[in-house]
Length: 344
Image (tube, rainbow, N blue to C red; front, side, top):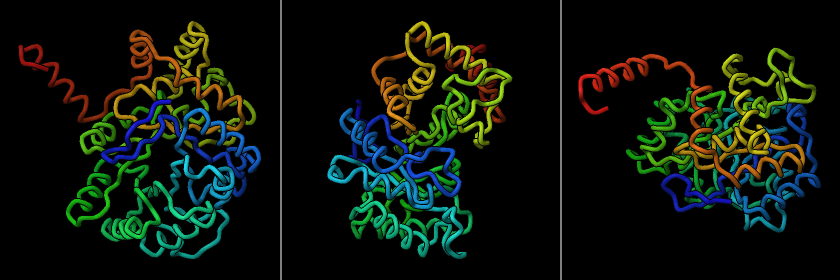
């Protein structure tokens, strides 16, 4: 299991991060998984034994139960783990009032105290904003997070699901005000969702921000279990309306290539899809979500082999989305300069 530095920090995290949305299973998260503390402990300890030190959750997963289960599963091995959780959304059980959402100082301070209690720890290693607020100024949010770091309740702060300009503004605010900066950005990225290659990945690399990837299998679609034109298999996330949009034609063309590579290499299609993300430039850690030990075993095996240049090129080509403006225009200008003898 390879370790990678998280952004410009000195913190080393495993290239695989165990996501815990499958822990608990209530208040709308039943379709993700219903792992109990006993089941979760088995998976968490297996991860630790395999070299995985990174675990990701959020306060709103199963209305706090995911944090509770993760904390209990790590009992006795807390010092071996890097715990990441998130704040932004109101609890899905409907509790709380108008101030129990967003990224205000009020909500952040109340939420971190609740997360610490549920996890049963004295600090959170990586505390992430779970999305864009749009109402609270970045200075208020970042000062609250900076105070938590200074108080020792949080070690590092991160963001998730931001646009390039939103993350840039947050980093600029941190620099201007001398506040703790986002060490990481957690984003959707897979063979079925490559939009982040246009701005978010290059921007993260330029600004030394670590990249955590969520949904590397597109909600399980890239595991290859669903046939083209068929309804999602019962029990899968897609069967209950998983929200990630995909281009069906391009995605199933990609699945055909995944299956072909998997058959020739003697691995699963899911492993091939994970391997592709693991090898992408700028990616720090890939968040996986599993319901049982068989899935965990298969996912972890993706760290033990590599794609050939030919396999990588085939996957790149079949999954490539059309370029939106102004990227197609810039590509055209680059090609034009090459035709005129200028360097690309």
